[in-house]
Amino acid sequence: MNDKKLKDMWNKAETLMEASAYESSSIEQFISGRSNDTTQKIRNMIIFDLVLKALALCALAIDFVLYFGTTNVMSVTVAGVAILIPLIFMQYKLLNRFSEAADNGQTTRNKLASMLTYLKTKFFTTLLSVSGTYLFVFIAGSLLYFYAAYGYVRPLDGVDFVVFLTFIILGIVLNFVVNHGQVKYHIKHLEICLNDLNDQNLKLVSENIELQRKRDRANKLLLALVLVLGILLLIIVFKNIGFIAK
Image (cartoon, rainbow, N blue to C red):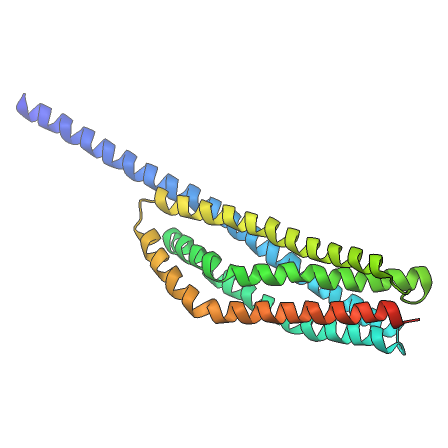
């Protein structure tokens, strides 16, 4: 009787262990699928921005040809191209870094940890670049509109300039806020996934994030300075165009 009870207890233990292993595997597969979805959304955001930057670059090149001989307009297009080209290369480099962080060859835990580290340390730089794209699209598109409607950039009065400047600032700010909200959601999702795996990686990731932030602070400040200077340069020149170009 005792032997039979012992055998039954052993069989129950084996069943529980198999069920637990199956449940753990199922949870990890589910989390892996969700992390792949997050990866694709972030990658699409960066790729879409690269496409917009490329279109803005092409539009500025067309503006240069259309307004050839109008010094002020040509200055705007050249300044825009000069700023856009390095931003495109930088954004492409950031896309490659994110792809490396989200490499499917990693384990689910390592993938989640590396993606979380990247989004908390590197993606603010990407958001600045993404938000700045609106400025170049707006100016390139406005120049094309003026040429199609008037054949030149019509003089702008004070009200026109205030309206244009308001549209530019609102566009950049809204772009940043919307994308920042999406990234925040993905960061929260990744943190929950790591917790669901009952893994200690979240603590290690937090420590690594602080270290990376200190290293990347100078790069973020430099990019922010470049964007601000670029915006000021283009706005000042664009203002001069409105009052001088005929």
